[in-house]
Picture 1: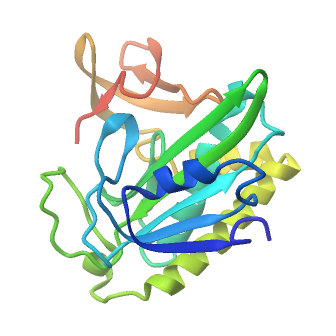
Picture 2 (picture 1 turned 120 degrees about the vertical axis):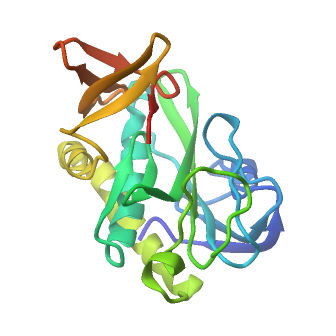
Length: 246
Protein backbone atom coordinates (compact mmCIF):
# COMPACT_ATOMS: atom_id res chain seq x y z
CA UNK A 1 0.00 0.00 0.00
CA UNK A 2 1.22 3.50 -0.89
CA UNK A 3 -1.78 5.69 -0.09
CA UNK A 4 -2.73 5.33 3.55
CA UNK A 5 0.78 4.53 4.75
CA UNK A 6 0.09 7.16 7.41
CA UNK A 7 -3.18 8.85 8.37
CA UNK A 8 -3.09 12.06 10.43
CA UNK A 9 -6.38 13.43 11.77
CA UNK A 10 -7.10 16.96 12.98
CA UNK A 11 -10.29 18.17 14.59
CA UNK A 12 -10.01 21.64 12.99
CA UNK A 13 -7.72 23.06 10.30
CA UNK A 14 -7.72 25.97 7.88
CA UNK A 15 -7.83 23.36 5.12
CA UNK A 16 -6.44 19.85 4.78
CA UNK A 17 -4.60 20.93 1.61
CA UNK A 18 -2.84 23.69 3.53
CA UNK A 19 -1.67 21.21 6.17
CA UNK A 20 -0.65 18.65 3.55
CA UNK A 21 1.22 21.24 1.48
CA UNK A 22 3.34 22.17 4.51
CA UNK A 23 4.40 18.51 4.79
CA UNK A 24 4.77 17.69 1.10
CA UNK A 25 8.45 16.85 0.83
CA UNK A 26 10.07 13.42 1.20
CA UNK A 27 11.93 14.49 4.33
CA UNK A 28 8.73 15.54 6.10
CA UNK A 29 6.02 13.08 5.06
CA UNK A 30 6.03 9.67 3.41
CA UNK A 31 4.33 9.28 0.06
CA UNK A 32 0.71 8.36 0.55
CA UNK A 33 0.31 10.26 3.82
CA UNK A 34 -3.35 11.18 4.33
CA UNK A 35 -4.48 14.28 6.24
CA UNK A 36 -8.09 14.33 7.45
CA UNK A 37 -10.12 16.83 9.46
CA UNK A 38 -13.50 17.07 11.12
CA UNK A 39 -13.83 20.74 10.17
CA UNK A 40 -12.15 23.21 7.81
CA UNK A 41 -12.27 26.91 8.60
CA UNK A 42 -11.27 27.82 5.05
CA UNK A 43 -11.96 24.87 2.80
CA UNK A 44 -10.77 25.58 -0.73
CA UNK A 45 -12.07 24.55 -4.11
CA UNK A 46 -10.87 25.08 -7.67
CA UNK A 47 -9.71 28.59 -8.70
CA UNK A 48 -10.30 30.14 -5.27
CA UNK A 49 -13.81 28.79 -4.71
CA UNK A 50 -14.76 27.81 -1.16
CA UNK A 51 -15.95 24.40 0.03
CA UNK A 52 -18.82 24.27 2.52
CA UNK A 53 -18.80 21.47 5.08
CA UNK A 54 -20.70 21.14 8.35
CA UNK A 55 -18.42 20.07 11.21
CA UNK A 56 -18.15 16.32 11.68
CA UNK A 57 -20.54 15.49 8.85
CA UNK A 58 -18.38 14.98 5.78
CA UNK A 59 -15.14 13.45 4.57
CA UNK A 60 -12.38 16.05 4.30
CA UNK A 61 -9.00 14.70 3.32
CA UNK A 62 -5.81 15.40 1.42
CA UNK A 63 -3.23 12.95 0.10
CA UNK A 64 0.49 13.64 -0.36
CA UNK A 65 2.09 12.05 -3.43
CA UNK A 66 5.48 12.22 -5.13
CA UNK A 67 4.64 11.25 -8.74
CA UNK A 68 8.09 11.97 -10.14
CA UNK A 69 7.48 9.49 -12.97
CA UNK A 70 4.97 11.93 -14.50
CA UNK A 71 6.14 14.75 -16.77
CA UNK A 72 4.59 18.15 -15.96
CA UNK A 73 2.70 18.20 -19.27
CA UNK A 74 1.01 14.94 -18.26
CA UNK A 75 -0.01 15.97 -14.75
CA UNK A 76 -3.74 15.72 -15.54
CA UNK A 77 -3.37 11.95 -15.07
CA UNK A 78 -3.35 12.63 -11.30
CA UNK A 79 -6.67 14.45 -11.57
CA UNK A 80 -8.08 11.52 -13.54
CA UNK A 81 -6.82 9.03 -10.99
CA UNK A 82 -8.26 10.82 -7.96
CA UNK A 83 -11.63 11.57 -9.57
CA UNK A 84 -11.96 7.94 -10.65
CA UNK A 85 -11.28 6.67 -7.13
CA UNK A 86 -13.91 8.99 -5.63
CA UNK A 87 -16.37 8.03 -8.36
CA UNK A 88 -15.61 4.33 -7.75
CA UNK A 89 -16.58 4.82 -4.11
CA UNK A 90 -19.78 6.80 -4.62
CA UNK A 91 -21.01 4.50 -7.38
CA UNK A 92 -21.15 1.59 -4.91
CA UNK A 93 -24.01 3.49 -3.24
CA UNK A 94 -25.30 5.78 -6.02
CA UNK A 95 -24.84 4.08 -9.42
CA UNK A 96 -25.81 7.20 -11.41
CA UNK A 97 -22.56 8.94 -10.48
CA UNK A 98 -20.29 10.60 -13.05
CA UNK A 99 -17.21 12.81 -13.28
CA UNK A 100 -17.89 16.40 -14.37
CA UNK A 101 -14.79 17.77 -16.04
CA UNK A 102 -12.26 18.32 -14.75
CA UNK A 103 -12.84 16.50 -11.46
CA UNK A 104 -16.15 17.27 -9.77
CA UNK A 105 -18.19 14.22 -8.83
CA UNK A 106 -21.86 14.37 -9.78
CA UNK A 107 -24.64 12.14 -8.51
CA UNK A 108 -27.23 12.59 -11.23
CA UNK A 109 -27.09 16.34 -11.85
CA UNK A 110 -25.98 17.32 -8.34
CA UNK A 111 -22.47 17.80 -6.95
CA UNK A 112 -21.52 15.35 -4.23
CA UNK A 113 -17.74 15.79 -4.16
CA UNK A 114 -15.06 18.24 -5.18
CA UNK A 115 -11.36 17.71 -5.75
CA UNK A 116 -8.49 20.19 -5.61
CA UNK A 117 -5.16 19.06 -7.10
CA UNK A 118 -2.10 21.18 -6.29
CA UNK A 119 1.12 20.17 -8.03
CA UNK A 120 4.66 21.32 -7.41
CA UNK A 121 6.86 21.32 -10.51
CA UNK A 122 10.62 21.80 -10.62
CA UNK A 123 12.28 21.79 -14.02
CA UNK A 124 10.94 18.81 -15.91
CA UNK A 125 9.77 16.93 -12.82
CA UNK A 126 6.47 16.73 -10.98
CA UNK A 127 7.99 16.85 -7.50
CA UNK A 128 4.91 16.57 -5.33
CA UNK A 129 1.14 16.56 -5.45
CA UNK A 130 -1.43 17.36 -2.81
CA UNK A 131 -4.84 15.95 -3.73
CA UNK A 132 -7.65 17.42 -1.66
CA UNK A 133 -11.05 15.72 -1.55
CA UNK A 134 -14.31 16.94 -0.07
CA UNK A 135 -17.10 14.35 -0.10
CA UNK A 136 -20.56 15.25 1.20
CA UNK A 137 -21.54 12.31 3.40
CA UNK A 138 -23.96 13.10 6.24
CA UNK A 139 -24.73 16.80 5.75
CA UNK A 140 -28.42 17.40 5.02
CA UNK A 141 -28.64 21.21 4.83
CA UNK A 142 -26.39 23.41 2.71
CA UNK A 143 -26.26 27.15 3.39
CA UNK A 144 -23.61 28.53 1.02
CA UNK A 145 -25.84 29.18 -1.97
CA UNK A 146 -23.96 26.68 -4.13
CA UNK A 147 -26.36 25.70 -6.92
CA UNK A 148 -26.61 21.92 -6.57
CA UNK A 149 -24.97 20.27 -3.54
CA UNK A 150 -26.11 16.83 -2.41
CA UNK A 151 -24.88 14.24 0.09
CA UNK A 152 -24.83 10.48 0.46
CA UNK A 153 -27.27 10.75 3.37
CA UNK A 154 -29.75 12.66 1.22
CA UNK A 155 -29.48 10.19 -1.64
CA UNK A 156 -29.51 6.95 0.34
CA UNK A 157 -31.81 7.97 3.18
CA UNK A 158 -29.31 6.92 5.84
CA UNK A 159 -26.24 8.19 7.64
CA UNK A 160 -22.85 6.64 6.93
CA UNK A 161 -19.82 5.76 9.04
CA UNK A 162 -17.18 8.34 8.13
CA UNK A 163 -14.30 6.07 9.13
CA UNK A 164 -15.55 3.30 6.88
CA UNK A 165 -16.00 5.74 4.01
CA UNK A 166 -12.48 7.09 4.58
CA UNK A 167 -10.88 3.65 4.69
CA UNK A 168 -12.64 2.50 1.53
CA UNK A 169 -11.66 5.66 -0.34
CA UNK A 170 -8.03 5.22 0.72
CA UNK A 171 -8.15 1.65 -0.61
CA UNK A 172 -9.59 2.76 -3.96
CA UNK A 173 -7.15 5.66 -4.27
CA UNK A 174 -4.28 3.26 -3.70
CA UNK A 175 -5.55 0.96 -6.46
CA UNK A 176 -5.87 3.83 -8.91
CA UNK A 177 -2.47 5.29 -7.98
CA UNK A 178 -0.79 1.95 -8.63
CA UNK A 179 -2.23 2.26 -12.16
CA UNK A 180 -0.41 5.58 -12.52
CA UNK A 181 2.85 4.14 -11.19
CA UNK A 182 2.63 1.04 -13.41
CA UNK A 183 1.93 3.09 -16.55
CA UNK A 184 -1.70 2.00 -17.09
CA UNK A 185 -2.53 5.47 -18.35
CA UNK A 186 -4.68 4.37 -21.29
CA UNK A 187 -6.90 2.37 -18.95
CA UNK A 188 -7.26 5.39 -16.67
CA UNK A 189 -8.19 7.54 -19.68
CA UNK A 190 -10.73 4.99 -20.93
CA UNK A 191 -12.33 4.70 -17.48
CA UNK A 192 -12.44 8.49 -17.09
CA UNK A 193 -14.18 8.94 -20.45
CA UNK A 194 -16.63 6.13 -19.72
CA UNK A 195 -17.75 8.00 -16.60
CA UNK A 196 -17.54 11.53 -18.02
CA UNK A 197 -20.67 13.57 -17.32
CA UNK A 198 -22.51 14.65 -20.51
CA UNK A 199 -20.05 13.01 -22.88
CA UNK A 200 -21.65 12.17 -26.24
CA UNK A 201 -24.81 14.19 -25.50
CA UNK A 202 -26.02 17.56 -26.79
CA UNK A 203 -26.26 20.19 -24.05
CA UNK A 204 -26.04 23.94 -23.55
CA UNK A 205 -22.72 25.60 -22.66
CA UNK A 206 -21.35 29.13 -22.59
CA UNK A 207 -17.96 30.63 -23.35
CA UNK A 208 -16.57 34.12 -23.92
CA UNK A 209 -18.71 34.45 -27.06
CA UNK A 210 -22.01 33.41 -25.44
CA UNK A 211 -24.25 30.35 -25.19
CA UNK A 212 -24.10 27.45 -27.60
CA UNK A 213 -25.19 23.83 -27.99
CA UNK A 214 -22.35 21.36 -27.94
CA UNK A 215 -21.29 17.77 -27.37
CA UNK A 216 -18.27 16.73 -25.31
CA UNK A 217 -16.01 14.56 -27.45
CA UNK A 218 -13.10 13.94 -25.07
CA UNK A 219 -10.72 15.35 -22.50
CA UNK A 220 -7.14 15.53 -23.74
CA UNK A 221 -4.19 14.19 -21.74
CA UNK A 222 -3.34 17.87 -21.16
CA UNK A 223 -6.67 18.33 -19.37
CA UNK A 224 -8.26 20.42 -22.14
CA UNK A 225 -11.86 19.51 -22.94
CA UNK A 226 -12.93 19.17 -26.58
CA UNK A 227 -16.51 20.26 -27.34
CA UNK A 228 -18.09 19.92 -30.78
CA UNK A 229 -20.77 22.37 -31.88
CA UNK A 230 -23.78 21.64 -34.06
CA UNK A 231 -22.01 23.19 -37.07
CA UNK A 232 -19.18 20.69 -36.68
CA UNK A 233 -16.65 23.15 -35.26
CA UNK A 234 -14.64 21.70 -32.36
CA UNK A 235 -13.11 23.90 -29.66
CA UNK A 236 -10.72 22.96 -26.87
CA UNK A 237 -11.10 24.71 -23.53
CA UNK A 238 -9.04 25.01 -20.37
CA UNK A 239 -10.77 25.05 -16.98
CA UNK A 240 -12.99 28.12 -16.45
CA UNK A 241 -13.01 28.93 -20.18
CA UNK A 242 -16.36 27.18 -20.67
CA UNK A 243 -19.36 26.83 -18.37
CA UNK A 244 -21.97 24.10 -18.20
CA UNK A 245 -25.53 25.40 -18.27
CA UNK A 246 -27.29 23.14 -15.81
